[in-house]
Image 1 (tube, rainbow, N blue to C red):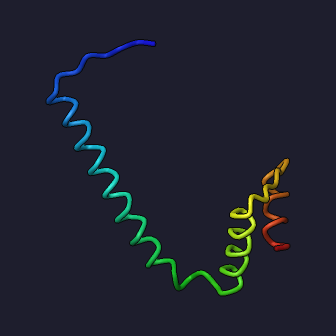
Image 2 (image 1 turned 90 degrees about the vertical axis):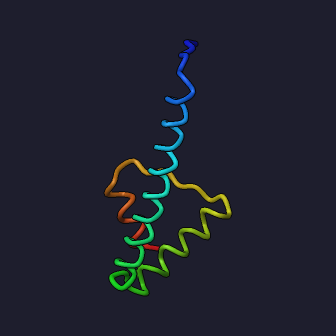
Length: 76
């Protein structure tokens, strides 16, 4: 493993940038969530909630293709 030596100022700058990016990402995520809330139908919400509950219980699925995955989601 390689070790890199950075000046403290550089390290703090990196940490500040990381915090800024994280904050901006969360703001962006909340804006997208609000903007798309009206476009998601109740039927789609129900399917996604069902899938989320299954994942919370630890039920996992493997798919061989994207088409198989799409078909699975439609049949939930």
